Image 1 (cartoon, rainbow, N blue to C red):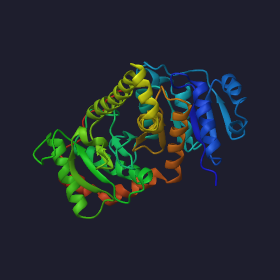
Image 2 (cartoon, helix red, strand yellow):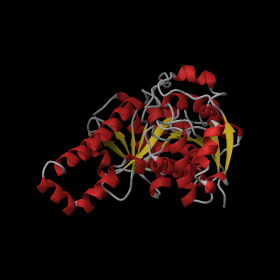
Image 3 (cartoon, rainbow, N blue to C red):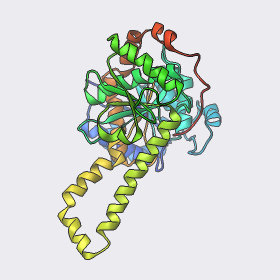
Image 4 (cartoon, helix red, strand yellow):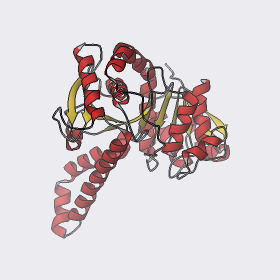
Length: 361
């Protein structure tokens, strides 16, 4: 069965057309149900497709030579939403020409364009950026928000928890994912008023059995990758800092091992002996194997690929996108929100959401 086609912003990312087309081709090679709308410079896309006849047969090209710059302000980029490859890819989801969009371009611009074109789902005040990260266990952990909004009140955090759990059920297979709020300690008295209020709301909803999740209090940042939780919820400011700290630590460990194994002849011999273990570590820490952050809470699926992703990373982002379409992510979120109910949010919330922020991740 063919899935709704996926719109690819072929011009986004550090290397643009070459990597985006190669990534789509890799994904298509593994999944012959994938179909694509390739948005960007038609001549360059046609040239790249010469090496990928299988992808060409499953693709349509939408020509566009206007591109959103990597450091362009979202407020400026959004004015060109109707002329840029990123904007046209997102608009294809709005019009139904595609079921989802994938871009490796400017995160802030993609968030702004997606929110304007697709709007937030009923019951969601703000969308959130969610990504999957490796853990010590067999399953990954979903974390959100990673930069879509710098601030979040209790109501926002509860909505993030519901959306993150729906996403986690798709990528981990757990019927009731364990959800925790990121905090400076695990004690109930720790953290901001917003965190404590959100914890109280989620505890009440969990005890009532209305949510398809298990709320288990707070988690500290050093436990995110332990595998003890399936979903970590936080505001975009803290989430983005935590994400980049984790990515930086992974690169530090990889570089440290590389230096250690090349420092002497004995070290090089030791590397050969331990190569199976180091290759496993490299695979586990490779961000391309977890590429593809999702804007949750929109009336449509939009996935952000890392700008420096390789073709393998782009293929992973495309595969994540297809999985979300196949498992009807937006419908799942809508159903779970209906189970939560507006009464719970009104009873426990402490006012309206704080101001939106355009902060690229």
